[in-house]
Length: 375
Image (cartoon, rainbow, N blue to C red; front, top):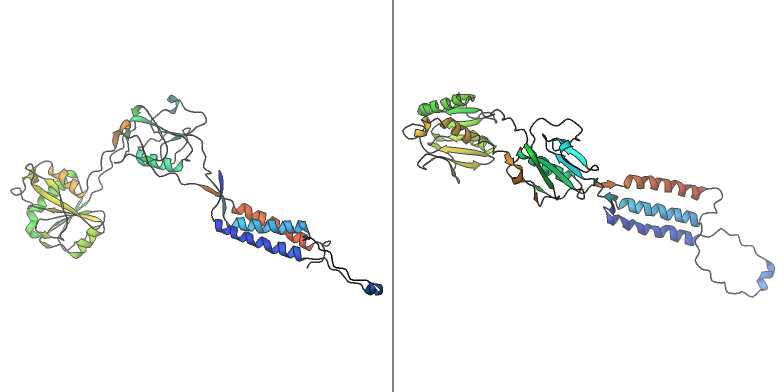
């Protein structure tokens, strides 16, 4: 732990120490002059010089101490690096800690939300390994050795290897983390179509039925769907302003080839077997809009009648998350992470108590009955 001052400018208050020094230097015990007649005939001698002398040294020292404590209080005294530097060893769920040799002084925890001790039951659900490694790195003291014990196969990894500030000892043991259960698809569809696109709408309904996705079908008059629903807009002419705002606020929409939308940079999102683009997408505000480049007709788009069309449609409106199951050897943390936040302990409450005690002593010394007359 390192003592420090968070607001060093507060030490400027130390200049106030000069005030009691001047007062006590100028103080003199009250004297009553007495005239003697015979003294008038004595030759006046020059007064001897006296060295500066401070009166009531104990009271003066108390006042100086009080002002010094106030100045340090204003400067914000604190202790830095108050984190525990005990070595930490984290076990991924599914590993038996008894099979791994470890330092008896190390703090053994589960690599799971809450970082519970290993003497508690092991978590049974899949955990986000990557996020937990980053969190553990930031919550562990910079001087504490960090060891992470993982199985050969990980589940819950994200797209990027974690970067950490510690020199992590990455210990791999045989086994695998329990795979996370695939969550049910939250995708809901809203179909808005006019009479000219009634034939193409049948293929959309058939694809939704094949995927067992709920679909809300209505005409263009009922334009804006709920925020959690993907919109399929099959209508000619300009896209309504209400739908445009809905997309810009985070919505995802698939529009027909003859729907007029704002121009922008697009990228192909679906090609046929010959490489011809069938759908192009682009970002619009916080959302995304995909535009069909061909009419929804088997002659112009033979892929409509292929078995893969329902899954392609779902991927266009709600892309599948990247795979999270990786080999532990390929997921070793990289250096270069942000260092842990330096924790500090505020010492001002203790200085406040010391100031109160010094003030009480100063008042007692200044008002006691035996004290000489004040200046």
